[in-house]
Amino acid sequence: MHNKTVLRTRAVAVVVGMSLALGVGAASYRVYELPVASPDHGARVLLTDPADVAASPFGWHDVDGIDGAEFTTLRGNNVWVYVDADNNSLPDDAGPDGGLGLVFDYAAAPGSVPPSSYSDALATNAFYLGNRFHDILWHHGFGPAEGNFQTNTYGLGGLGNDAVKIEIRKGGGLNNAGWAAAADGTAPTLRFYEWNMTNPNREVSFAADVAAFTYMQITQSRLTGGSCLSNADRAEIGVSDFFGVLVTNDFAATTSATPRGPATWLMGQPVSGTGIRAHPYSSDMGTNPLTYANSATATSPHGIGVIYASALWDLAWLMVQRDGASGDLVNGDGGDNRVLRLVIEGLKAQPCNSGLLDSRDALLQANLSLYGGTYACDIWQAFARRGMGVSANQGSVTSLADNVAAFDVPAPCSEFIFADGFEGPPPEPVWQQFCPVAGTIDLPAGQPATTSGPASVYPIEVPVSGLATDVVGVRVQMFGLTHTFPNDLDFLLIAPDGRSLVFQSDAGAGVDLSNATYTIDDAAASLMPIDAQLISASYRPTDFFDGDPFAAPAPVGPYQRAATAGTATFASAFGGVDGNGSWEIYIVDDASGDFGQLDGVCLEIGVLP
Image 1 (tube, rainbow, N blue to C red):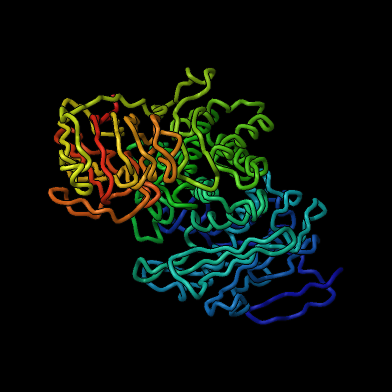
Image 2 (image 1 turned 90 degrees about the vertical axis):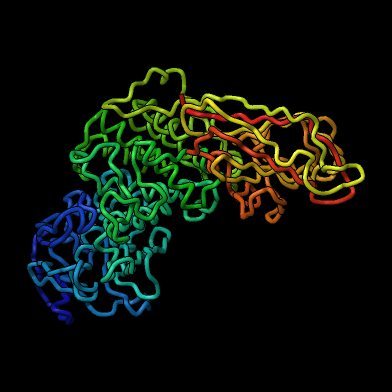
């Protein structure tokens, strides 16, 4: 016999000298059962005893490790849910009470009334999700010994006393889901806000994909280290997106090409919508074309993370095609389970402040330790088709501008065949060269008497024809550039449909340049120098000053601009355009006192075969 403190019907009562004796996990909850992602994806059901007997052996309301619940509210060993509408980080009230039978069954009408009208249903769903994520991850490498979130670790390691606090209907914000990570032994907090994208508002507790995202954020902080997720080139957001999509995907009812946009319900979008990302997750490169080549124009941490998640989602489907999907993320051992184990083990193995390619390599290491290398080619194929192949280069992890994509795989994986129509890495572009006959071009016109203004050929017109498919890449080749202060020169490229890119501006400092020949290419290893001489080499598009004007007949700005003034690349500026027609290159010398010449310029246009 032992004492229990019981919260009953929003009042506190102390029951002395007896146990509630509810049994292990004896509780029921009306919830959207995973993998149902939201009210748009399915209906609520009443679940009985959903706690896993291994991960939560005394149920979800226990904290002392003895049969019988300590709480009849939505609080227990793994999770504590409460409303914090006044944003003071404390419960607004005791919350819903399930009574001695732990029955949490509440009405909800999320499409017709505001979230405040069904707080108890939201709280119940949030409690279910938080506990379910705990139980899932317990079976996939994130247990007490790894510092998971439990008040009582039941003697299995870790510090304990850190059940996750979930603050629902959180005040102080809108259209967001937040988190406060904490070291082992200190409770982290998840913050579920209302979203006003629809009328009435909606709230994160009914959006399992977004709730899972936040839970994985605090998980990564434990496994990799909170101070180790601060660099620009990192997978963090992608890992959390991936977890949100994985736990809410019914592999039996979807295909690898099915669009999965996070937070579609919160956004008021159909289930096939893009959600909060630029592209939904899908193996179809037409639906989600993102590769490592897009990293130079990506934001950090969200944009770069989505590129990583795109590769993980492709990998998940390759492993499901190989091993099947168990449909049981707690006790199963299908491809869906195994990819999650790889991801969790990879988080432990990756170095502090790892780049995307470091995280890829950590997956390969995890594959060796967990599965003896069985999935090496699956990993390489998934990442290579997203530009993170063998020859890819991440450069400095503090920058996205120096990432170089490559789509190659190790030789043993070159004969790998994708199953069920899952397309492999995108084919290499076919490049065609187009060189106008313009003769020597003075920079500027009228030099040496005139030392600033447009080039003597303005614009340089480059006729392009015979392209069978849309543009996927552009290169510019400069021949015989001579100038006494190349930093004065600005170059603007205009496509036949009017799209623009300032691809060279204020580069090369004031160091005399004589007869230099170089190529400007998205795949080059470095930007042009700002304070050193240009040499015969390959450079990425480079624009060091946002504001250079181009006189008529150049189209009026604003223009897309390359790094560092902007983030555009040839691929992002011109990808998808019909390249047939007249391209135009405008060159301006924007400062007096110096002049030069250009012997010629060529465009190389890349299209898919």
